[in-house]
Image (cartoon, rainbow, N blue to C red; front, side, top):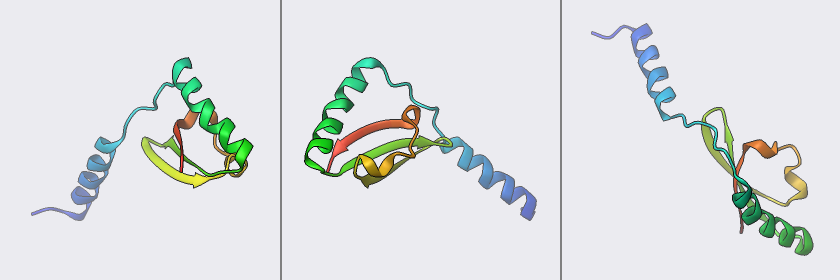
Length: 81
């Protein structure tokens, strides 16, 4: 028999096991990210931003100007849409 408290603890544990550490972006990776950003700024096109937040990766599609609230140290990848 499982008590509700045990179930909640088990679910929290399972969720914590899915978390990943914050990635470190090296200079070479930043150089690869820089090109699509420059092109998107020049042609006002959209980009897909993959960022890390609280142990999980999230993605969003927006313009360069639209993501000014993202911290650069949380960005994992940027690709053209």
